[in-house]
Image (cartoon, rainbow, N blue to C red):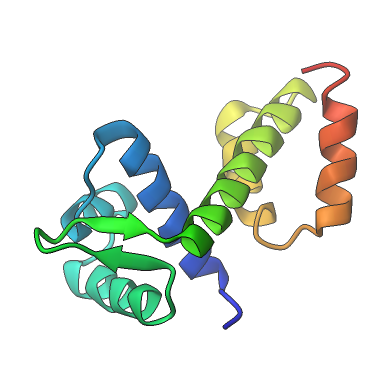
Length: 122
């Protein structure tokens, strides 16, 4: 299954919340993303069906290896692009918003070129 932008956003959010809190439930995602509980529940179900997350007996969401790989890649892109745009003089809030949109569509080739270039001054 090809994961769409919204799926990547959910995985990235689960990854971030796991780093912050350890254990993550659907309500945590709803609160962080400001989405309704039914919307999050539907997305979580789809992610579980497609093998990106698992849910333990206590309702905690756990990234599978494939889910974690996508989440880490998306998170890295977001972080690096935000820093890169900020260093170029873009307002931090705008940089973060633009990075959030770009992180899902940028090719590996272009991202890797930006990453290599950014290492020179970040």
